[in-house]
Image (cartoon, rainbow, N blue to C red):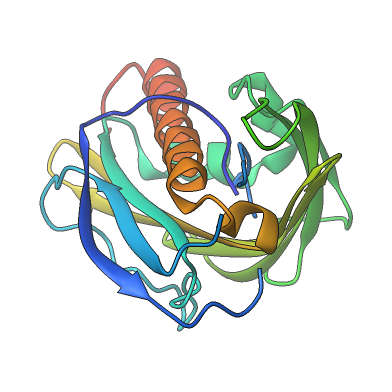
Length: 226
């Protein structure tokens, strides 16, 4: 799941995806919302920046049936190793992502497949949900060093719940830097009750995360791919 604000580029709605209405993150976290049944799931995403990294990581990806989904990408003028370290040192997230208030690793060693971490982020009030703090427990589903990572898990707050958020990140060296691609899906009755609002919140969170990652990585590397 995710957790931040505005966009690095204007986003547009692509063709709707639909599924039967059965049941109802992570930072990916992140900002979440809720509110009245919807039958279709538009895939929101930022404007295209060219060929993005693959939307799979070792066969793993986001939930193809989720009603709430967003994807975006950005080019960061910094070494891949710097970007990767920032992204996978989860305990360091609060130092460069203001929306991430705490992070706790639930197992020792480097982040790897099966690793778990618990983190918190505030969620603002909406017409149907109170302001709260989401506690997200993420489990790494797949990780390929300096290539891609997928994690998933629930986000729970008072009056708000995301049953499962699935978050994919992929990294590819390009001329002038590294293209970072991210996708996330949410499922759960509370957020599926108001799909447009939840999708907007998810998009703001992912765009803010990309923006913070870019600013921090470029500042630490002097703004060049090296």
